[in-house]
Image 1: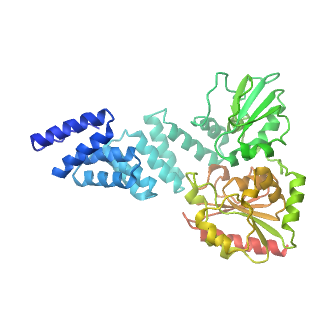
Image 2: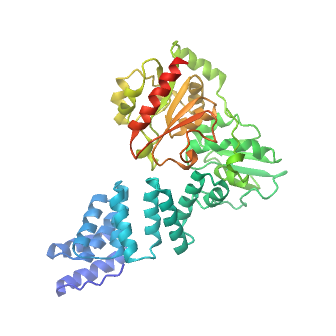
Image 3: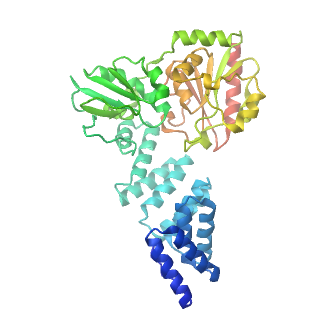
Length: 449
């Protein structure tokens, strides 16, 4: 952003020019000192803004917000200051304040594609999908290579069940890897060739889409399947794979490659053509027997997963504090934690409950699968445990946030991906009470069966 403010005297002018020079050279620490020295003399809107960009780059959220707000109070009416402050507010989950700032950005600069995209992301988080789609369309019209807008548009299409267009657009994601060999997109014959299939994103994605491996194997190719270590023992049961590799190992020669998450696109998947065979994964019988000895008991068992990885960007919306869940669990059941890890904020509630917790004894997903197989019912938020239980064919209740991930689609209480799943959705954002009130009668009815 070009600076136009005229300093009030020669000292200010010298400080300003030297700070700008250092800033443009990315000598941020030195520039910061000069901006702060200048601001100690008197307020300067552009210095506040520039100092805010330095703090933002350093991920000093509070300091950046303070500088941007001071720039605005000093009458800096520029789209970039509103846009950057909007980005900061979104990080703090101050959605409506961020939305207002993106709208101000657009009012001042109607061709600001990223402002349309970010405003679309907020509306998507609020489940206002028609508004979000219109904003993404505007962003894409301004910048056809806007990956963020293209990807989020694809997620709305997928949530609506428009899989052909949705999966085609989903190919724009940045997590696709580049290799010297060509990508397989479902068109080229695989007969007699070797195909590398690699996993990306979360464990749940691998569990959901590994069902396609069997279809690939029928095309006459040798399959190399690269999988994250915690999933490798569970995935080894898949038929048709010539070579299993742990992610990070050296790759053997191959002719073509395809992400596991690109297989629905390659097979031109529609809502009616989802490979939804019930129980396409199985648990190790010996591990089941071992867990059975440890659990014992005559009460029906309910497996629980109330939180996912804290590194997931949507974790704040999908995870439930254990103390919120506990009052809604009838005493008629024996409860088993299916999570390997429990966050610090849940330790006290877990210690004061009767929930079985095995922690590090769950070495990998094959252990969790065997434990899942012994449950009469699994209750999970949207995390890998939900996918695992459903892929095993277990009766599973999935507790969903107001704006859930695309794979759970819209306004339905079942899943075309998993025949044994029942979905319970929030009525409003962050309203877990409404979901848990729906869960309670399900558990009580299950008790009477």
